[in-house]
Length: 429
Image (cartoon, rainbow, N blue to C red; front, side):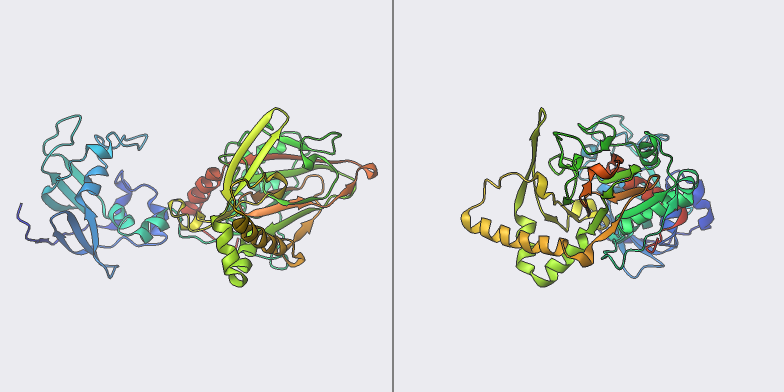
């Protein structure tokens, strides 16, 4: 094929026909951010197809390797599972089109050679609709399709608005579920009322979002005052701000706690948005912020027949592989920190100084949101963002019983994308 660029003047039919194309997966989500437009001009380069879309100022370039690897035909993508039937390693490095022509809203490409392994389909034909190509025309457009462009809203105590969602609305309407899911992303903290006082109600609420994340505590757990407790949460003592299970390879993304009984004096639940604390630290003490980003902290649980261990820095930001919407989290659980056994004296001093300043922001009363959960009330919070704790209580004054369980963060991401594709995303939910 000549290296000279050849122009093509494609013609597109009505965009409404895109719904008929099997590749138009989740096109409603895409259309909330982009209106599919015609190609003003198209050209074939040595290694890429170049398309200038009418609604974009820049020309999009699509690598031939990428196009062949993402062919949507039934030979390459299973029709019902939507999973690839070949490996990226099967695409020849010198693959090129021998023909590119407009078909409907997109393009039909005939390739010059088959894949490296498998069926020898010499002149394989791939058809790409316009909405698919525009979805992946840039990193920005693909991130919007995945709702990875969102940014959470940080808060302090005066900025958090307590707004209950009823159990009935949450369990029986998309609106109620979507509200909770959006709040878990936006604020990291959400509340449900009128939850039945049943032992399995907490896991029932969790499974509306996704399967519970079982741990060595089981599918769920009880928070009560217990003699000779194996966990400080099972005492009546003040429980300082922390995140759960930081010693696991994959700590839970969401935690749920439901009040089943509460007649004690004290025992209020307390919450802090650690993202706001990070903002304050970064603004006032930039060097300390950097220290907490790069210093690994030991977390462990060595008790009751278990020895769990993991190291992670206190602050994680700009985690590119997670996408912009999920690129930050905090790892903070002083109660479960182990010895920092690999720091020099100089590095230890830097860490302890930085950690103290971060803790001072966390303990600032202006950041603390506090309430006492009454029977039938349930809280959900982002375990990698919102710190939680409890004020002390008098165990002789009555009974206090909470039921808890966990969700993997992937379940929240999944539900947020699916519901936001259908109903849109409200940053003020």
